[in-house]
Image (cartoon, rainbow, N blue to C red; front, side):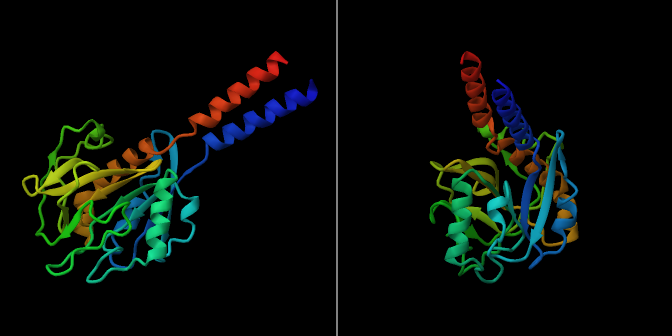
Length: 247
């Protein structure tokens, strides 16, 4: 009986520790824009859940397997060139497939060189395109929009520039559009147990980041709420406890 009670206590302690663990966001930033991370790391509380941020400039993404969310900052994929190799592409896809969430901020596309998409599940889901800056967007009626533009901030504007266009609408869920509906403002791509939150938001300067601070905070809140939660392990513990009681 004592062994049974000790085992139950151990399981309860482990489940409690698991549930209370911090949410870790790995932030790939600093190689192109310096303005993003100091603002991003301020969003350290999501309805009582602690969020911790770790910045890296290494595009090999060391420590990604320990993160819950990957934030890919301004120009870290494309800025006059493409920076990811196949190993990084595969690492990102594997991270999402296992339940991770990727949030990507604006990437540079030029007239003769659209930003590459090998880090997405399929290469033809969207097309990078060179655009001028816009400050307005249209929210779609997709149910996945949820509270993205309402909590914790009511967001009615943001700064967008080089964009993603030609979305495969069978796999890219449009949450907001720009350029009269032609381009992705913010889109959702589900893959395996996780998802990509693809944006055309530009954070090149401190002014851009200031404009985008409300939507940046909302994106973090949205991602935290969308991440895979440990419901299944808790359910399994309940079954174990029930069996022990019967015996």
